[in-house]
Length: 327
Length: 74
Image (tube, rainbow over all chains, first blue to last red; front, side, top):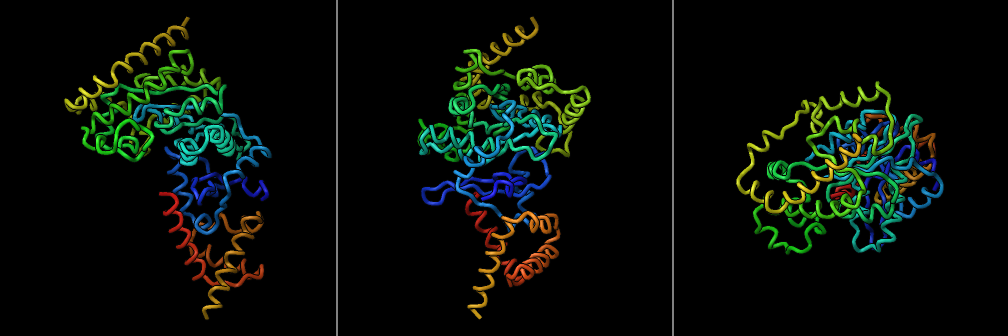
């Protein structure tokens, strides 16, 4: 297969046929990934006649060949998050600039990370390959490359770090009761028992569905915080609270990623914050107060019992980092 | 009749593979956003390259691809 035939294509999905992993590709042409989530862009493109009829399908090993043949941009930074805490706002701000490739919660990355049955060394290799495929420059201006992972991929942060030991990363979080309120309104996949099986393996499906949903959500958040806190405590990564957005992107996140932008670019990036990142037709506004008012007693109690101690630890680390940045 | 149908489906599959490996052909098709115009162009280019198939074959193929996509992707 000629690699140049894949120049304007992106991996769209991973799937298995027997024991072989395959990648479906989507023709992107000169379109950028500007929708809030990778899947939004792919779904849109895949409705175009060309993509409905023509599709590259390759064994996953083809990504390894591509990796040998064409080195993509090295990731500038990884974004991990607790969900519903402004991570899409951050990725949309970054995607507002043409020099940035932003991959936001891409299904093929999740496909590779969550293959527990595949040996870890192979998953690490696959992860390097798939990220290299996403980092291919399709436009001359592209120079920075950011990846926002699915929230539950944070549980595999050690695997991701083994694949990319020197890539700076941030962890976005928010007051847990506000996150729980958001998930009770509209549940993310990780908060539906049984959908992301790896997330709480210690609970049986029956236990999970009998549990109050607020408690299930709180336990998921606790699990993610626990994993990431171990690393943050040892001085890795940067903890970013929703309350510091959007200014933190310019003030701390980009510095942490060692990315420099012109004043004009910063202005463009901040202009993206005027819109609700998940529904670009609506204006963005911080909604913490509304969420706190809406919180049920069960949400408050689950947040206090299961997540608050971890949230407090995250806050301690964030404040220490901030003080260090000032001095 | 059945033989012809199989032939034209086979021709379409071969032509699709040809397009995936030929940037020139891709360039003539990728920008067409209107479905009927796209299908007519595929038939025309297919014939020019020696592959006979009909608009109906393409519509059926698109339907099959969609079904396959939903099976694999959901």
